[in-house]
Length: 193
Length: 258
Image 1: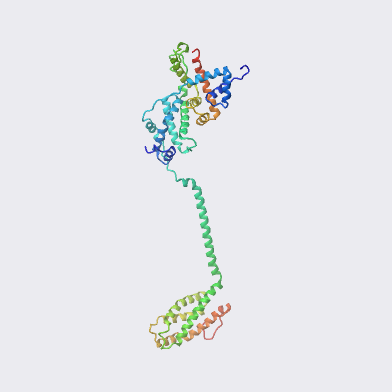
Image 2: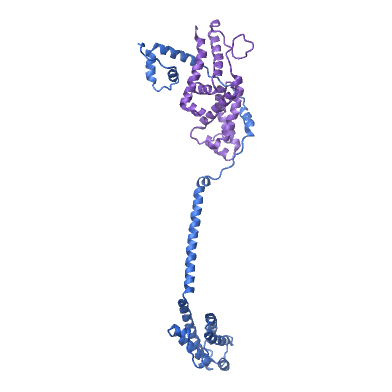
């Protein structure tokens, strides 16, 4: 493709001059970043894919407003976090996971093994993963997104605040509440190990 | 140690874990000194380090194309923007155009005003116009008088040497101008004399190259060149004499039809 060697800004100007196909180059450059963050925030593939479509649609529509104050990667990253948050918020009522009893046939949610019954470290690891998923489901969309950006994407408080359109202090509080909830859920796994 | 020590808040521990604490060194020292907080912090680290970062599943090769297909119909083609000069300088351009218009209007106005003023000046100043007419008329009458003198005194020997016909042709053009001017000015007596002169000049201009003494005599008689010469002299004397009253109201002269 002829735009492969061009800078993001050159491609952006080409798109704004009517070369719609040039947008594919930007998509190719940032799909991995966008899919990664949307997948971590939404927690599942189909929601992440839905968010990716929304990210690139919204990105194209607001390309004219991109002023280059941050890199295009950061710009797409913010849109991705925002779109993933919207998808999580939309899915949350029906997708909310709960910690269920092992033998409850009515519930298909993530089930936790009894720590006392399985002291094996491998089993513990699996249990931690399952509990983590369940605990993440307990977070509000904002807490979940803020935690993913802070803990998994290693973003600063300011970057999280910018992505979520909230104040830095609110972003810090969202991360703290997420950690508190995860700690409460996960701490019992280490008891008596 | 630790009996009166204030323990760290959970939020401070979380901040410290993500290295966003404003006083990292102080908290580090506290954690070394306080086993309670150190235990709390160790547990927090253990839990957060266990929280795995999910690895997104690999995408198919044509994933980007799939996404493109799903959004393509919703993406409008951007219209090519106007040139950056126009975009950023359009207001400046309008201002420049307005300034140019004002300048052109001003200059045109000044020129028109000047032209009007000069034409009005000529039209309004009759003395200036009169001076021009007098000078031109005086010159014309001088030349006409000389021609008539030559015509009256010429004989058959030197006719070919006299430039009567060519001089008559030149005077004919100027005489028409002067006569029309006098007619427009209402000087009908002067205009009548100039009319007689014009007829003579026309006859003389149309004479053949080989002008004979008989031709001259015929002209002298038919055109009364002696009387015409007298009229021209009277006219010339009045034109050259000062005093506007003399020009506007010439005294009646015996035998002079003006």
